[in-house]
Image 1 (spheres, rainbow, N blue to C red):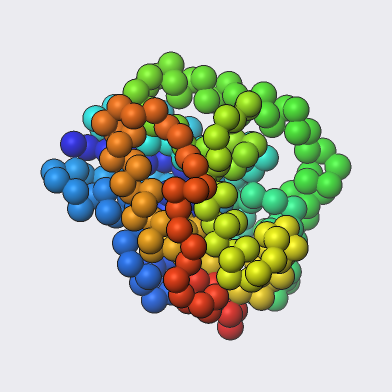
Image 2: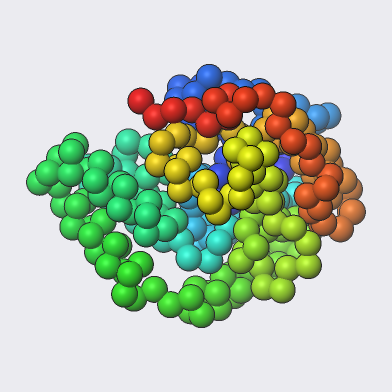
Length: 250
């Protein structure tokens, strides 16, 4: 069976391993590709906007028997940045104001005369003064409806609680948040900024090896027709120390 996966880092278990991190074992999409006669084409990219993933989907969905769509949050922007985006494919995706600020600081160090600095400054101002949450949510819903119309058999996974309006079960991000809270013995909201400023998340799809396997087993059931339902109680606490999952930045 030919399976295509679209979305953001919750489906991207190829982008950073092993050239950036030591491989931590197969992610859920890799496990899916090891099952039976499955052939998985993974179009997911860390930080990707739904608009980016939707265009990938329109161009390639007809080549595949089944579609899995990891639905990101509705506030992301995709824009190629001069002197920067070529460094990693995810650097063209801008998920938040904080990320734009961090990347702008990096680019100033790389090339203080780069046109990309002006591009990132414009994005910074957009997130501060222009961004409209209602507009973003309405656009997200229109794209979701279009995906369902084009491929009614699509398996849709909400990565965030804002990914799908009126969500009635947990979003996949709840798994990674649970792991962080256990590792840090604190609420996710209290520690996530510190973690992202000092460490990099080396988990594939923001989940431990054990939880990637659990989600893979769930995906087998979803592909067999079981309704999508994510329950944080089905997942397990991490078994390794913090440094295994969150690497100190060099």
